[in-house]
Amino acid sequence: MPTRTARTAWDGGLQDGSGQVELTSSGLATFEVSFPKRAADDANGATSPEELIAAAHSACFAMQLSAVIADAGVTPVSLEV
Image (tube, rainbow, N blue to C red; front, side, top):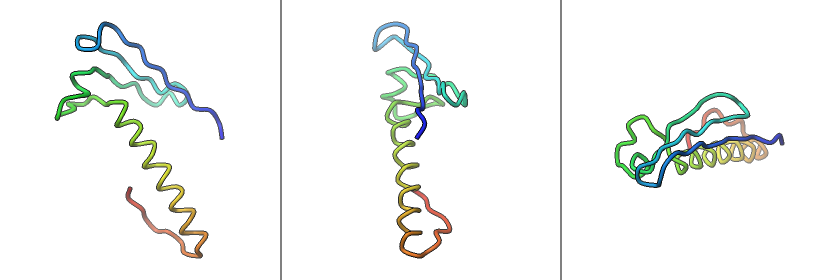
């Protein structure tokens, strides 16, 4: 498997600071992050480390479940994780 990278640039303290998370290996996106937005009920267009980890885990789980279903001799049509 290839290595994938991301980076975060952060300015300021925890409560008053903010930063950007960049998906560097794909160059696909840069996301704004801050602790107040991370802890808020409404993300208002911002992401969080937890959301990015959840996305990675759900993608890995869906791929592996697809492989397990195929190994059982069934062709998966659609999975939603």
